[in-house]
Length: 113
Length: 112
View 1 (cartoon, rainbow over the protein chains, first blue to last red):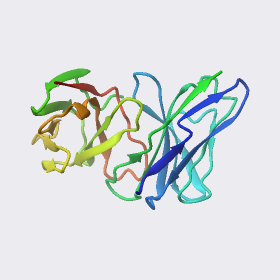
View 2 (spheres, each protein chain N blue to C red):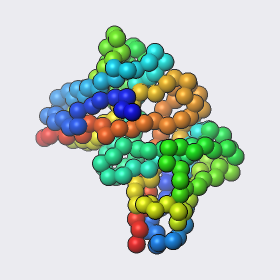
View 3 (cartoon, each protein chain N blue to C red):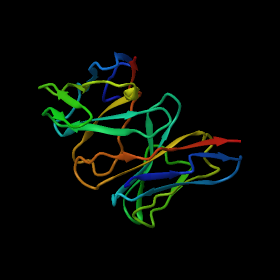
View 4 (cartoon, one colour):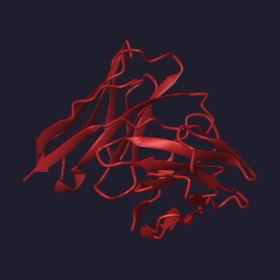
């Protein structure tokens, strides 16, 4: 089945550690996105990429980094500079074009030990 | 800036139609209305989107008023599995790959 796979589903980070969240899609979508969701809140955009080897900061990029070396993969690294990383992280992808909906993975829940 | 306004919660009896309203009084001529839903601890699921004509697919119908300042998502025969938070989003049609702004949405509870 085509879709977006995020792993792991749950992740724990120690203070001062960097962690990387995986996002893979087999939908042949050009654009990919990372969002953060806090309890009871909407989604906030961290980074997005419209094409391989290019990405743009979203509204809350500080403390995060991404790469887009392959079309199907868009990993997110939560660095030690992110002081409040506990959240639900969602990856999405879309066809690059007018009026295209984004399709989401099932998320990774990150917690601090 | 909140571009849409939705009631925080609604109840619906199983088997009945669920009508979820959304106000978007400042919508621009080039902005589409999108609807997503999110079941607890899962990613948002795309439902439907439209510009000015009513739209229908296998999941729902979208009714947009003639002045485009409000819309209604209709789930024709709600089931318990439709219990979720429903998000109404407006987004420009020429917005290549940029973010969907998800507000707090409407929490729909389908009751047996």
